[in-house]
Image 1 (cartoon, rainbow, N blue to C red):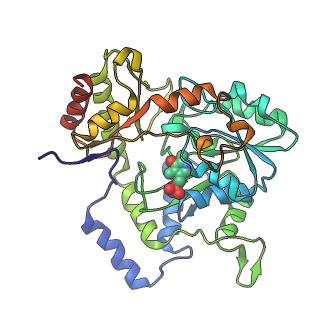
Image 2 (tube, rainbow, N blue to C red):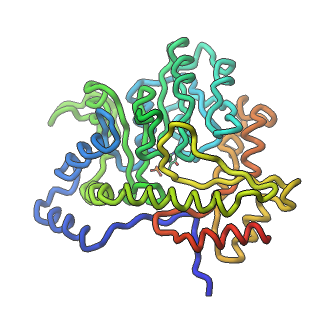
Image 3 (cartoon, rainbow, N blue to C red):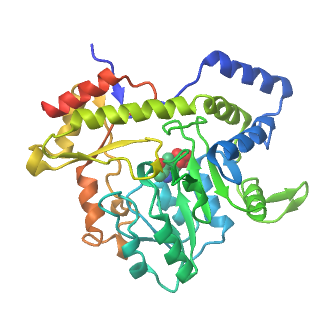
Length: 369
Ligand SMILES: *Cc1c(COP(=O)(O)O)cnc(C)c1O
């Protein structure tokens, strides 16, 4: 009887409109390699996002791997354990040692107060994540990076159109990396991008994502194949027409959750940050078992029996996976905030066409558990 509600559902624009793009691709027979839709999307995204240069990618993970290559990052990179596992994988794929640092209790982003203690002579960069689309303390991170001569690459895979005091958050750091995976606010089936601030860097990134080719017979770097194709770019162009409405809907869903969960003992959630334009990519709640009476996992399992599929983003911590838990910085007790949050956080369903009646139902299921 119940229809299944997942934590997210891809945002699909009208199919008839997509068909028009497909017709054009069939006609031109230009399927990939910087095609007309790819070129148009780079321009339109620069305008929409308020950035100078963007390079499109086949997905966010290859964009992260390439971002580290583009700046020739080596040695050790300081990062957060509270993210999707691809953040650290990208470091590992570059033969760099990830160094985990704890997060802030109020934003769940990398804690600037704890970065300096993790810097060694081998440190070359900081790779923070704007978790759930909430901007990191970009000013503090810049000050630290400048003082120690480090690069900053933001994993901005949860953000789309987020700004701080009207400045797009993508303009902070040396590079920002985006994901347009099906589950994100804005999607191109799979897809991603690197945002940079000068033409030479844009050129290097474009070479790297195309095997290192800088011309027909010139290869300038050991690049990879991470190109976005025309079908993906077409999806991106079409989605851009609907993105403002999609974010508006997500905002209404967020407000509905906040209203419905207000005052429940042991349930807390994040409010909008001052002077920030949000994209409402996730709706995480924290469940305090002592006050609420149930653990996060009990709430997660309970909602499942009503066909509500929430996700424990981010659990376990990246530093707790077997691949990384041997690292010094990953040892239990070293990141008390992240270790606590990962046990109590639960992301509730949020997507473009989730109706508010369902949101209210989810709130009352939690309230009357
Ligand atoms: C989605 C995501 C990625 C990976 O992006 P893909 O496009 O799926 O490869 C990396 N980091 C974070 C924080 C993400 O949410």
